[in-house]
Length: 496
Ligand code: NAD
Figure 1: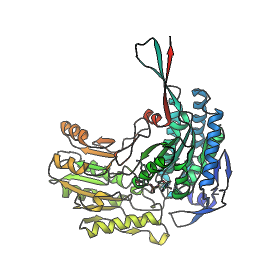
Figure 2: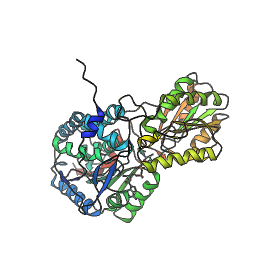
Figure 3: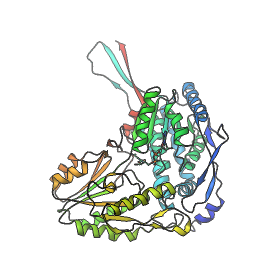
Figure 4: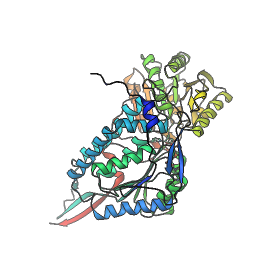
């Protein structure tokens, strides 16, 4: 028998929000007793009060994490034992999938169908994958030829701080948690003040799964309070940051001003999507542009926000992309058929509208969208927006918009395409569309980006590293390479 469809509105009305922080496996209020309002971008409704964590709470969370680490109640367990707990954690996440998806949608505005199929599913898969990996990673013996063994072993770094953004709150947290917990570290997570709810629930599910108290703590709060306190903390050994390039720069300063903790930044992007005249799949390319830039309301670090098209096909291709826009109408995120939801909050809404105005002012040609939508709901919605005739110097070609706005530029030949694509402080992702395999490889090699797709954009998997060149960051999330960020390498010489 088919299950009846879920009435997400009814569930949204009944949902109870617990915004207290999680330290030592326990819910508690912020030391100051202060809270901030958690507002849904769907309709402006106040969902509840969230603890306004600050320096005293970060101190308590780091102390708890340190005590858990020093006691070896997690790091001292065998890899197989940690694996079982993390597998249970992943199962708990799937068991709570509807609740987590609803919290994510209410808090951040993304379509409920995506929250279920992408956010919850990827979060669980990430944790399960690192659980599976942890008892399959071997240490090394160096081939010194000496009369001694040089053992190269990996050890947990200790206390890992994680500061994450609001666009994929659970997935970004999982990318930090998976390798850090699997390797035996303790974690203090500071979610974005714009979307703190699912991180708090994850911490409870982790304890239910058997993660010892103190191993995973969550302190919500503002960046300049809780975030700064965590990044400056003298007892945090490594800091995994995902967010804007501006804030990532600060993370490095904080480390310099405190204990030189290792900082791994995953930052902004302005990804280029190159379409050559020999591409025979222009319709699929146009659909891929739209599907990728409008997914998650354009609030994706790797969104292909710059589309570079050969001049001979530029006008036709721009029309093809614009024709896709009506397939992404901003709609109620709690409706299971919605494909584009709300922008995270009024500040980000104004930022996106400001860029649309900048595009008009600088003379770009508006082919689709260009305005706020669903104003009557009290929520934050923007029409899917397509600009053509964009020149490389315009702000909409250079700056990260983080909204459903795509800029189409034109190039005259391969060299100019690569030059424009690389003329950016960012280098997160790129895509090359061409039927010429030599050109595709040549261009893919020339592009300064952490991930390059050829004739597609949407492949992704936990098994591959994710991260950027240049000011898109350092280090890599995902894959076995992420263990490098949360482990120390130790050499032990043993005379034989
Ligand atoms: P943001 O930099 O404003 O905030 C990110 C986090 O840092 C939040 O938790 C925030 O509270 C905290 N923070 C802000 N100021 C701080 C300070 N002074 N000290 C300490 N912490 C501080 O970014 P955002 O608006 O939340 O997220 C959007 C950005 O994230 C975009 O630039 C996007 O490209 C980037 N992003 C990158 C990736 C990636 O993997 N490369 C993934 C997702 C998002």
